[in-house]
Amino acid sequence: VQLQASGGGLVQAGGSLTLSCAASASIFRFNAVAWYRQAPGKQRELVANITSGGSTNYADSVKGRFTISRDNAKNTVYLQMNSLKPEDTAVYYCNGRLPVGAYEYHYWGQGTQVTVSS
Image 1 (cartoon, helix red, strand yellow):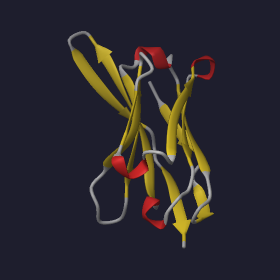
Image 2 (image 1 turned 30 degrees about the vertical axis):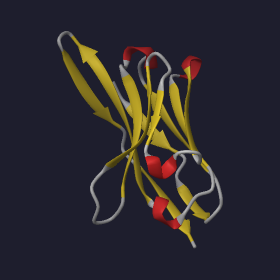
Image 3 (image 1 turned 90 degrees about the horizontal axis):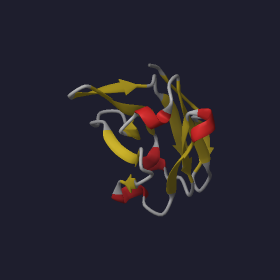
Image 4 (image 1 turned 135 degrees about the horizontal axis):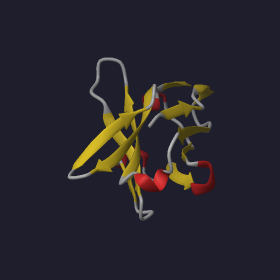
C-alpha cells in the first residue's frame, strides 16, 4: 500500500491550497486517513482526519479554515486549506491506518511542502 501526497507550494497569507493524498488501495480499507504537518523544530501534529465512516476531526488551529474530504472513486483524500497563515508553513504528510487482523498499520506519504509568506 502506498500513499502519494501532492499539492504543496508557496502561497501568500490569506491564500488557498488543496493537498491530495492518493492511495494505491481502496480508501475504504483504511480505518482513517489523516493529514499531519511538521514545522521546522517542532513535533509532527495532527491537522485533520476522516474515518471510513466519513467522520471528520480537525486541530483547533485549523477549524473553520481547512476541510478534509475524499473521492472514493479516485481513492484520494483532499485537504482544502483556506485563509492560510504563515504559521501553517510546514511539511504536510498524509497517513493511513490500515487494519490487518488484530493490528493496525500506519502508512505515510512522502510529504509535501507548504510555505505561506506574510
